[in-house]
Image (cartoon, rainbow, N blue to C red; front, side, top):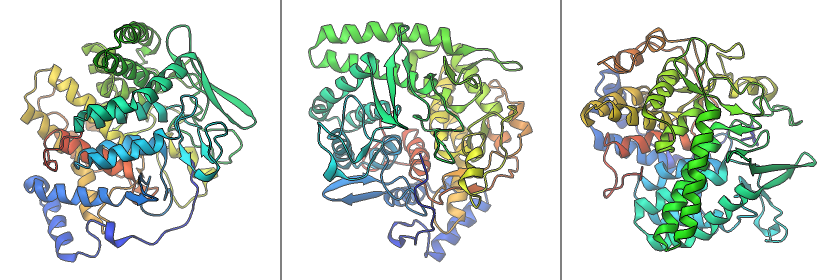
Length: 480
């Protein structure tokens, strides 16, 4: 995502969870100081729901999810929308609004791509899609996941059937080839002979380009790990959908391709880094820094289901815990890398701070994929649900304490990557105490970026509801 507005906006008091409510803020701050944050799950739910509501806007008869509700990114972005939607709209039981939001983006699908940003709808036609920016390779993949989760949460098979043609076009064009024009060239997205998808530079969520001159800090061109994990998961989903719609031959073709992708994925992405226990490469066949340890590999577990064996899932979670986990989010790069940036200073100009944006800076939204992966591993280890819930409370407590301690009552975009945590560096999945003790160590991380980011709030909320840490609204679960 490129920063488009560098001014401090006035707060929208109607969307704030704690701002201007002194007694309520004082009560929650007191509970946090005393370590009693989880004593009132219904109250915590209400705070999260109110924070979430600030990002949902009803504009022009449609439903938008703004990437932020303070400072900048005060508009909808496709990638952010589809990642944030399960938390903001499904976990809160707002299924009709989720469907309306998805329909709004589906209307602008073009050659298998979903816009990352719609600047001017008046210029858009199917033949000449001006006014929309299609420069994202992960947005369409997250779009398919948003449809899947919305259909599961709502139980609305008619909505799923309505979206099926759009999903088919996306998957077919990723298979045969599509792309977009930018920087006076065509940026191609296509499946390679091994079944894996190749994408251009600066088309994933790690897209910082500080001077706007086609020199991204983390280009990630080639076969990116989360793109291909999503590709695999979407093939399995489409196969199931086609089967339920009576298209057995199409379902079988999707299953066969998914089997091929799983084999290639494990052959190409799995490696054992020096001093590590096993991980997934971030990119193959492209970015020369593709062996860097980054959190994108967690998507292979959070959405990939059987993409990795249980043994490899455990190794990936252990590596991510030791090298990337912080109390306030997942680092975007291992602190062992020579390119690791410990601090992110929002006050600096983009030419400086964007060097750290995805080079170690910790992002709260990544706690969602990490929590999903951790839960899958813990269940494989035979942990009972109450024990898993206790570990998740320890995982999310620092972010929730930050939320209730600050007048905005929300969660910011990023935190410093910070210094390594000794307890996490020596962490073992066999430790019966789990993450509780390690995450209790003091942190030197400062908040940065926008003071209130949609997917930061959304993923914390989704994990809390899906795993029963706080109640959903009217039985909402967020549809895992």
